[in-house]
Length: 314
Image (cartoon, rainbow, N blue to C red; front, side, top):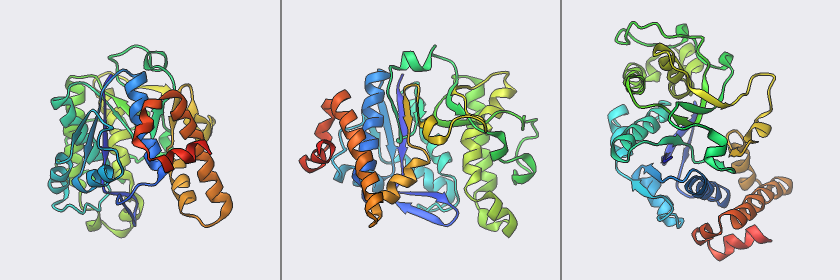
């Protein structure tokens, strides 16, 4: 199965926090490489990248220009302009950009799963994912963490359809939707939702605080399962995680897949910290996955400088 990934130079992860992709530290670079080469080897598919032009320049400067099978560095620039009227998109709809890039890839490159750049496979896809051709996501999410109907300003143009607000959300770090009416309606409703909600600053303060960062999560992790329910379909979670289930760290390294997820922020903070224990944790992380890369995907060492490879082996 093929995969589609997206990388942006500017992405909102919290209400007032913007992180520009102007440089890549070794831990992030290692994750990018592992996510691609593990998918190519274990899913036996191509990996297509959609990046904005500033982000792509950064990736090229870091020696990753040959990592992906195909690269589109113009579509996301156009999408950012279409969604928000400006390349500096501050309103929390990075997932809409990601989903639109995936939609474009489905048309241009054929069937693929949407796969995050902080997820890599440790087992053969046939072993881990099971039968092909059915909609799936990485794992289920607690419903209590997600928006309910009266918290979302859908706007009068949103169609009067009966969405199932009890549909189980799923984590879409890996997401595949079967081709057909369900997937088409999902993309259509995603676009309409963005059109009705793209200026969060116009909302009352209490709504801004409540919604900051969440509409984008709703789009890819809850609207998907709601639309599937409309069509009598289910997006199968490959793992099960409920409130009584495994911790994030346990889940992140379970049954043949590693998802950096919430640990990504930790790794980034470790890399910037002057505090020796934090720097040591960052070094341990890089050494662990660097040795994994060396053992399992030695052909990918060509994407790293000698100094970077020395960190893996020290």
